[in-house]
Image (cartoon, rainbow, N blue to C red; front, side, top):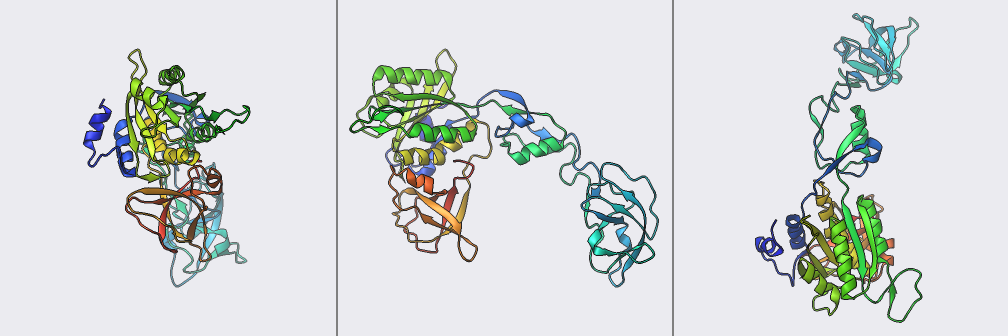
Length: 428
């Protein structure tokens, strides 16, 4: 396992006093690795977990050619572009029971959605595209369909013996449905990641304590709990830890012993005279950064030994301001935790929207501005900021539905100019 210094040496332009957002992501990609261990779960319990091995399909889906809709099945070779087609109905094929009769030239079978296509038939005409003359036959007008229309082919969704879901896939509702369509009852997933979290600082009040001058109620534990719970990890809440060496040491040692990752808020500013920073240095291999970003400039990252030869816990020391905590988590910590969970899909997806207003921005840092995405009158996506972008304005995170990502080299944004947006849906 490489040390923090060795990882830093691999990164071109690494400067802990002015680290770019891209540099942080590159560093964390080298720092964290998937945790060991798997478990087998029933499908209903596997939602949100990460698949630990390739899932090879034991059957083809669908298992046979079948009808995509209610109508009449026939041999599509009989279609003519310049004349209608008349067919005699010789039977009915129902879903769940194969039709065993024979179909000759000029004949068809009434068929229900999902029913097995009778042998020799390859096309289905929807019932509403037919007329029924007095002789009981059906008539199909010319040029309403082509040979092969409305037939689902065997294995067109999944073919037996092929990979249906890949290792590292985050198990979404659609993935669970796909696994169920193969007749599976259980899935092997990576074990649940354990993440310990606590707030630090003498100025932090726990809920229920009386107000006092200069103190603020702890919101970070609650936003962090929500984000970690949405991520599907096991959350170990260690509460608020005062800025006292003995208490901090006990909290860090307990967190390292019980968790794969530790997240703290507060006490990581460069030059800050408190015990949190000192204890991080004392107990582990930790780097302290000033990131070229807004909000969320100070951050600490490293490892703390668990003791008894059990390896290390990864440490994420986040700033103390509420919005900065959430932004640094979404931009950096969440992708790193997904990687530790074994997921191959870790980078937050960005969509583009037109800015509904001018946005001031200096090149040389990445800014994550809170924004609200909506539909413009022309049907395109537009976004505008929530106003005050102060790192303590937590109400702006409630108003926003995403973060406007203004990249490191980007300057001022003019109205109508496209910008990237990291949407909250699925993360918050």
